[in-house]
Length: 279
Ligand code: NAP
Image (cartoon, rainbow, N blue to C red):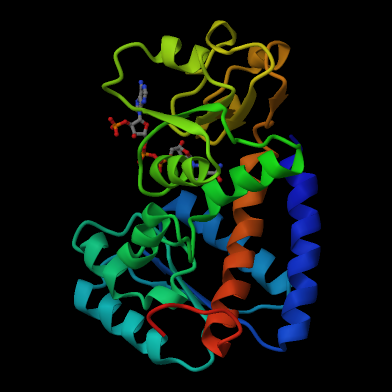
């Protein structure tokens, strides 16, 4: 499943939508100098700018207090130029991530992490949805994989990837199993899956003997090693799977594309072109 190609197409569509809307404002907030976060922010900023988004790149010192971050978020909530807000996680230890996540106005929460957005996904009425699992669903759709009636196994239960991926698959009528570090027999669970989403961060944890022949496998996990970037899925899975995302070039580019879609959605919510229940 060529995430790079699909992401490029989606970004083209988003660029046209932004031109039609006239102005879309996105603020990204990075606290501290975590190198991985810096890379993600730069990728997001560049993609947003290329799509015609008015992208504000806010950088704060690692020693910034929680109150200062909360004050900034409140200002962005009230800022008429800003449609979407993204606070890059993780935050330095003196800042409570939950408090910051709750502070972002739900309709501007392009990451979909606010409980109002997470709750609506849980209810089956999605509003803003986390970009990585949304990208997985878009890849399945692009490659003609309808989750309805299929067994889907999601490995990982984080709020960012695993849980929302499971909810989206459930909403698409898959029979969903969520695996995690306490799962007794991961191989047995994965073997039953027609769709596998691996979001762990352990290189090669999904091996070829665990995969049902013909299954669609989405590799989300991303680990930087001395040999380069490694996914959760062992490359030999390509011989067994019907469809597989490459790493890199699969779920990563899709995450960026779906984030841009979220920014457009946020602009539509603010203009009343789409209904957001709390607006
Ligand atoms: P996370 O919060 O660390 O969650 C990892 C999950 O994997 C946890 O639920 C954990 O279980 C589970 N796990 C750990 N060891 C396991 C094992 N041996 N067997 C089964 N499950 C195990 O990470 P995350 O934020 O969800 O991210 C997951 C991976 O995706 C990371 O590598 C991250 O870099 C990558 N990522 C990629 C993209 C992309 O665009 N491709 C986007 C976001 C994240 P417990 O809950 O029991 O601890």
